[in-house]
Length: 251
Ligand SMILES: C[S@@+](CC[C@H](N)C(=O)[O-])C[C@H]1O[C@@H](n2cnc3c(N)ncnc32)[C@H](O)[C@@H]1O
Image (cartoon, rainbow, N blue to C red):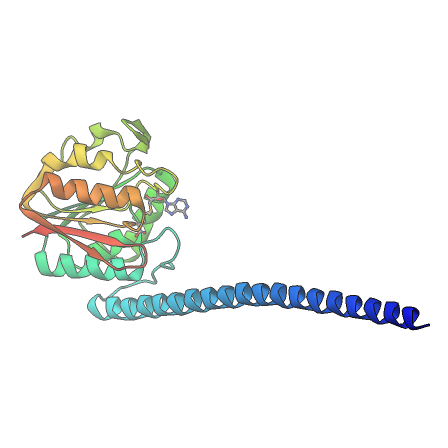
């Protein structure tokens, strides 16, 4: 009888140890999951906070843009492919301050209208899509903008770029005071915009300013740094814009 109760007691003890160990393992597992979840929530909070700061900055830039420039028609949404308001405001300010005689732009669109309305005297804006070139021309017409040529130039593989403008379409260009690089699209190809350096470096005036959009991407950032290397009397400023803007100007 005693042996039986000893055995039952030992069995109960073993069962208790088993339950305690299982509970401890479960507790540790829940702890790990909770930590993962709270890290995830922290990340989401950070992203939401950064994105609302960024959205607010874009609204601030958009409001300032409209106070600097009197537009005579609506502007398309400045999201996605279009230059962000912070870039557009920088372009408007550069044009107003430096009054470039010749502006060359790679990648036409709202930025073309902004620079024309800010007072750029002559703009030649290249576009690799005849459809988007036409959309820009119509937008310029709606805004009564003058002094702008939107030049369609077919994209083809060039050096390491999967698609760049026909270099022959730049033959008549010299003395660029403001060069804006926001094309070709380039999202999937870090080298897409790289030929701009080789083809256009010799066409810049000594006081030229170069603005590159999308320098948060490695390929565009490298292009900005290589432009600077080729222009030792210039300095490079990286603006913490939505897509990252590089401004290269004389020291
Ligand atoms: C980054 S976009 C140029 C944007 C322009 N600088 C602006 O501020 O509106 C570069 C090129 O993408 C092309 N593009 C523009 N909108 C597009 C769209 N919605 N889908 C695909 N390509 C587009 C055009 O050919 C344009 O030259």
